Length: 213
Ligand code: ADP
Image 1 (spheres, rainbow, N blue to C red):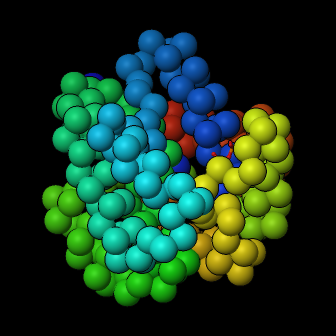
Image 2 (cartoon, rainbow, N blue to C red):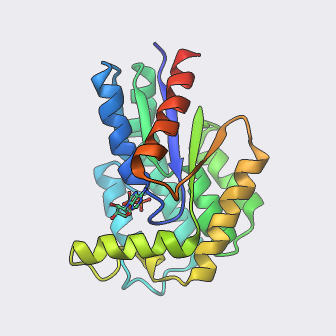
C-alpha cells in the first residue's frame, strides 16, 4: 500500500487532538500502519522551535520571524518523519500543516497569502495532503474548550495563540473555510459542534474512502 497523508485543521479547541487519537486507534486496530504527528514540532528540533512559537512570553516575535520558524519546523518534519513514513506505506495523521500557516499567519496576522504559499512550495517541494479534514467550530466555543482543557491541566494559556482575542480566531476560522472552498477535492469540512463520537464517525468514513481508493 502506498502511504497516505491526512492533515487535520481547525482553530484551537476544535477537537483535533481528540479526533486524531481516536482515528489512530481505529486504523491501528485494523492493522493499518499509522503515525500520528503534529506541527509545529514532530521532531526533536521541531519541538525546540515549537517552544519558541507557543511561549506566551514571546510577545515580541515578529510575524515574519514567526512564519519562517513554522517553515523551519516543517522542513525538519518533512525530512525526518513525513516523507520516510509515506515512502514506507504508512498513513500519516498530522495535526496541522501548510493550511494552518495560511490560516494563522495569513488570515489571522495579515501577512500576504501569496508570499506564504510561495515559501511553502519551497519548504514542501509541492507535497500536498491527500485529504485535509477541517473540524469547523465557532471561535467562542473552540476557545472556551481550549481554555477549559488548559485549566484542567493547570495551565494558564497553552500558547500565544490562545491569548489572542475572539476576532483573531474568527479570522482564522473564516480563512480556513475560504481555503476549503477553494480546494474542494482535498478538503472535507466536518461540523465540530457535535459529540466526539458523531464527529469521529464522519472522519472514519472519509478516511475509509480514501484508503479504499
Ligand atoms: P484541539 O487539539 O483542536 O485544540 P482538543 O482535542 O484538545 O482540541 O479539544 C479541546 C478540549 O475540548 C478538550 O478538553 C477536549 O476534551 C474537549 N473536546 C474535544 N472534542 C469535543 C467535543 N466534540 N465536544 C465537547 N468537548 C470536546
